[in-house]
Length: 319
Image 1 (cartoon, rainbow, N blue to C red):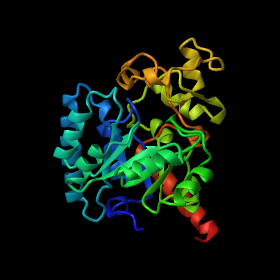
Image 2 (image 1 turned 30 degrees about the vertical axis):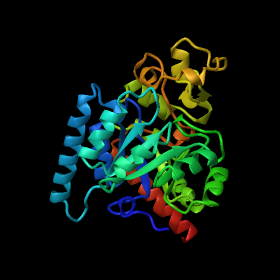
Image 3 (image 1 turned 90 degrees about the vertical axis):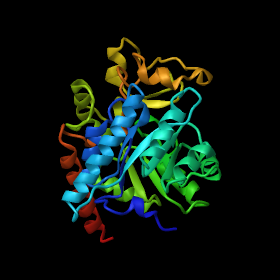
Image 4 (image 1 turned 120 degrees about the vertical axis):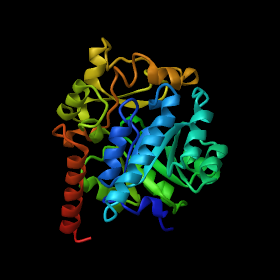
């Protein structure tokens, strides 16, 4: 099955930048789109909720102006992440704004709801749903999602435990639509590897934390460039959903990363998790691929590196 044109036109690389809680905002999203990868941000990052209208107006207007000034190199599309979970009381409001601005791509997380998909389809948008196993993948497609994001072991933030090889293999046995892969992808070679194993695109988050445009604390960015896979802790203590976090931030909060208790998933409150003093703000999410991140740099420099590495590996493998 051919990819929708929205996922192929105007892209330098087959990459969607994952929406980063607290960190992703218009400056980062616009920089990603203008450099030729799909930029994304979570709707919940716009606070108060009225700010989402302002952000979508700004992004839509600025990308339109960019394309008018650069017809030979128009920007990649952007995406908005919607948390489809009972604790997200803003979903109806935020979804209506996505419809108002005809957001090209919506990334749905923590729940697959047919009504959300139908709303985005009403104006021609597409929905990519993130999943951590084959059962969730089947459910998402049955409920009307257009594509899947396979969140494998090693991905930053909320992530699964399955090998990317196993997860992509199982999904590709029955699904030939758009498939993205997340999990420790931080080099151009890893992007090509994701395609080689059956994914259409790579879903990259942690390397963008250490960019000049990212809305992350300087100490957070420094921890990314100084860290490696051994600094990542997998726990559900902070939000009720298992995720990967930087060990130094857990230690700084006075917690023992080796003795974190288990949380009760039924009491998960995503609104509180994204605004409280623990997860995302003080306890920093990160994937296992950060060993490849060596410096804080502009988004343009990061995408240049990824493209260079991608082409070098393609040439070496003659593919």
